[in-house]
Amino acid sequence: MRDNLVKIKSLQSKIEFALKDSDFEKLANFSTELESSVEELVTNSIYKDSITQDELAHLQNLLSSVQKYQEETSAKFKDYTLKVSRNQKMQQAYKQ
Image (tube, rainbow, N blue to C red; front, side, top):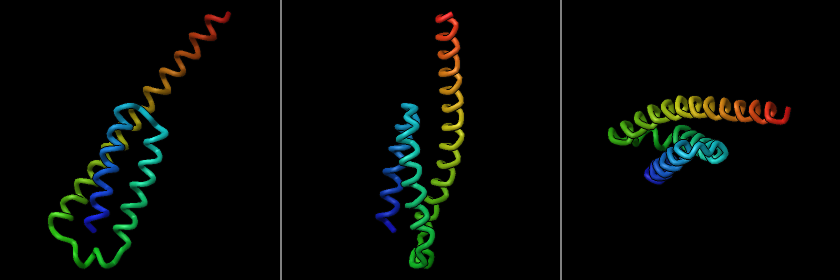
């Protein structure tokens, strides 16, 4: 379980950097990797019986972080698409 939590924590850091840089390609890859790591953790019945209070708190924090990532990603992607759209409109206006 510790290995999964360490991997998840590492992925959280990578996701935060990708969000900061608005690198949506890396963000998608890290998110997929995070999803599979969490799924592996949750589906393993051995972990269900031996989870500690500290690990449970960490998983609850992870849930909060994932929700925050979703909101930030949505906002950043919206801003990104607006910028791209504006740039395209400006380029078309310039060509005319």
